[in-house]
Length: 440
Ligand SMILES: Cc1ncc(COP(=O)(O)O)c(C=O)c1O
Image (cartoon, rainbow, N blue to C red; front, side):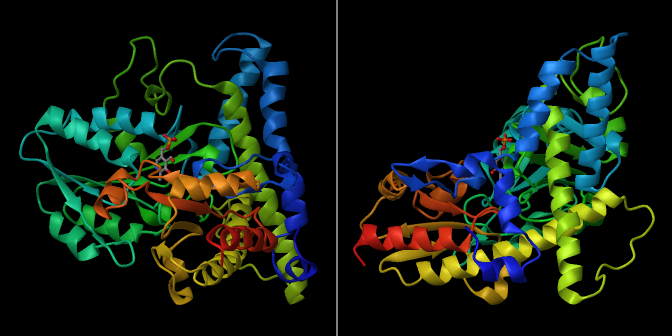
C-alpha cells in the first residue's frame, strides 16, 4: 500500500489507482503479488473488463449490418478510434486497429516494400525489439533493398546518434526505430530521428509499444509517418494500433480482399477485428483520462490554484486529461526508479545495463535490465516468483541487443518493469528479496 507521505505529495492517488486493478489483490504462497512484469503486458482496470464483457453480453455482432447490435458495434468502434486519436494526438481516420504490433508491422512492411527496389536502403537499430526489425529484413530480402544497422553505445545502452546519421543518405527510404527499449529502458530521441529521416525524404516508422505506459505519445509533435503501439502494454486489452499519416494511408496500396472498402482506415484492417477488445480500448483510454482529471485536481489543490496553461482550442478535453495523466505517471515512476536503482546498486555483484544517473532519467523509463554474478536470470526470476514477485528473464525479443552485449547465451537479463500502479513498498520488497537471494 502507498505510504501517507506518498499520497499527500504526488499528483497520483495511488490508493485509487490500485483499487481500479482487481488483479493486483492476488497473493502467491501467502505473499501479496507484485507485478513487475508490465513490459510483457500490464494489468487492466475493472472498467476494461466490464467493457469487454458488456460488449459480448449486449452488442456482439459483425460490422455494417442494418440492425441494432451491428449499429452499436459500428458506433463502439468509432468511439474507440476517436479515443485512440486523442491518445496519439491524430485524426480518427489515421488510427488502424490490428491484432498486435507485430502483425501490423509485417502488413505495413509488405505494403511499403511494393514501392522499393534494389539500390534503396532502410535503417534499423540494434536496440529495437525484433518486431521492428525482422519484418523490415524480410521485406528488404524480398525487394533486394539494402539494410543499414544503427549501433549503440555499449556503456549506457543508448542509440549512437552519430552512427544513425551516418547510415542515412539519399538512398534511404525508411528509418525504423523504437521510442523506448523494452529491455534496458532507454528512450530514444525520436523527434531527431524523424527529422534526420525527413531530411533525405525517407519515412520514419516508430515502435512506441514500450513507451506507451510510461510517456505521452504525440504523433503531431513527433511528425512521424507511422507509429505503432499495443494497448495491452498500457492497461488495455491484447490489441495493436497503428497511426499512419493520412496522406500515406491514402497513397499506399494495402494487400486486401476485394469486397473490403478502399476507404481509410478500414482498408488497412484485415478481416473481422476483435470487437470485444476494441470495446476495452475506449475504456482503457478513459481510465487514463480520468487519472489525469484527478491528477489535475490534486495538483491544483497542492498549489492552491489551477496550474494548467490554457489549451489551444483544437485540443480535446480528453487529450488534455491524458497529458495530465502522463505528467502524474512520470512523476511517480521517476521516484520509484530512483529508489530501485539506489537499492540495486548496493547489491554485491549486480550490474544494471543502461542509464543509472538520476540527472539523465529523462533519457530512460522505469524498466531495468540487470544481471547478478553467480545467478542466472532464470534462477533469479524463479526465486522471486516463488515470493510472489513477477519479473521476466531472457531477451524479450530484444535479441539483437542481448547478442550484441554477449548475454544471450547465458540467459539474457532479469527485467524489472515498474509502472504507475507499483508502490515504494513493492520496490523495497523486491530489494529485500534480492538481498536474501544473494545472501547480502
Ligand atoms: C518494444 C516492443 N515492440 C514490439 C513488441 C511486439 O508487440 P506485439 O506483442 O503487440 O506484437 C513488443 C512486445 O513486447 C515490445 O516490447
